[in-house]
Image: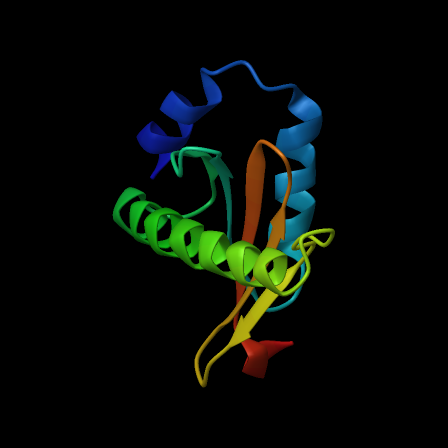
Length: 110
């Protein structure tokens, strides 16, 4: 996990991002935080590489579909937040123009 994070940190994003990731990860119930670029490539993560790649790929696709559905219903509208809850996890996604912020938490540990 540390080697993966070091490689991601080499991209030169300001330390404010690292501090924000750390604070998010410290919230009760948060299992991981992933930042994905517009191509679905993870650029920051607190998870292991395999889990990061899986969440990045699947959530990027889901967010794209959700955004398309919102725009189809109203072309003047856009997706601002996506929340998916299952028995084991709650996935919260904050899409931005260039990035997706993905937070995975245990809804039973909040």
